[in-house]
Amino acid sequence: MIGTSTAEYLFIQACIYFLHYIAPLSALYCVIVFALRPWAYRIPIWLEVWAVAETGFLLLLYIPRKVWLQRAAFHPEPLPREKRKELFTLCINTVEDSKSYLKYWFRGASLSEIKRENVKDVELFCWAFLNKAKWAPEDEEELEEYADETEARLGTKLEPGRGKAVSLRVTIDEVKTMYRSLFWYLCVFVVDTITCVSMRWHGFQFHRLPYRLFFIVFPLRPLTLLSRQPTPAKKTTYWYRPHTSKTRLPVLFIHGIGIGLYPYVNFLAQINQKDGSSAEDGDIGIIAIEIMPVSFRLTSPALKKDEMCDEIHKILEKHGWDKVVLVSHSYGSVISTHLLHHSTTSKLCGPVFLIDPVSILLHLPDVAYNFTCRKPRRANEHQLYYFASMDQGVAHTLGRTFFWSENCLWKKDVEGHRVTVSLAGKDLIVDAEAVGSYLAQNRDSRLASAAWKQQKWKGLGLDMLWFEDLDHAQVFDSKANCEILAGVIKAYSIGEG
Image (cartoon, rainbow, N blue to C red):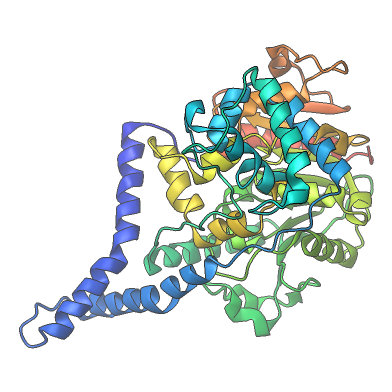
């Protein structure tokens, strides 16, 4: 993630304008040349070929795909009534500011525009807890109960009727995207090639899709044709570094939304930098899963949670790994949550390390609002909005396959594990302060003071790392910080706690 300086703002805006307007300008040029063939000004032939390619990409792939993205989501069956009540109680008990909670779930609307019917029926709670857009008569009592409890927390009655506010319902709302050019996907191809070379240099082996699926990922990946190792999964590729240590656990790593594994290469390499305790031992094995739908590619939709867990289980089973250190970043924490909840893969998860997690306190509006609704102002916000939020694969993943009640992770879910959560003080996506305070709560549920930010890492129970001056994902930009993260993993790899 870039910073917030004026120079960075101008740079990111220039990149966005360039990548966004290449295709419209190319299409306009093609129309003019076609209409005024003998008299039109002609650009060099190589630029003309590129303009035709950009125009074809826009008309034949991007626009039809954008229409396809709007298909309705297949929502999971709602939890039983008693489980929904338990989930609602968990949520409401961890809301510190009820007014802000409602305000940002309603896209920043003022409380005067949010009335009881907005909260109760076809808006927030009906979508959030019943997994549907419209309520039925049998839902009335339950939704009234939720609305009553919300009013009690607000300390005031919501006005009857329906206000002008419109709630944020990610899996029902329109999937919004912004065009990025064929040139952008050429950049993705170059970065992917650099990543492949770097991962090979650090001892990783690529496990590819079957050759018959070569064309389901765009930009195309020639490495698929060069690799000899197929993935045992149906649609999930990964990078594998053999586990040769006789005393330590291997590592399963799941990346976040971005340009694949490129930002993590140095971090993954750092895990096997030799130190005094490991000089005579072998290497810590690493499996780095690739999640193509959130890696700025055009590809098939994200897998459902059980499908993803089954795919990862097959991968671990292939290599004979029966216990791993589970490490994930950002969106990867959602996959980690599924693995911890799944009856088969939960047994394979040893210590857990979550970096910039989005799955903790996911019921708060910050992640959904900041990722899909916030009007960008600063350089880092424009970078997030255009390159991530408005990417077709990312937007579809969040808008049609991301069901918050399946994805939220609570402290009770990691009991029995050694867990570290790394948080960034200037995170533009996650309310890191709220997450840290929740994790630092003591047994009688009183909020801990900010002293948790200064606590030393112990490697026992639940630990936190706090990077005061960093934004989301910036922890991977520094070698010194990567060493800190790698140190946690090395410590966790000793034993099965």
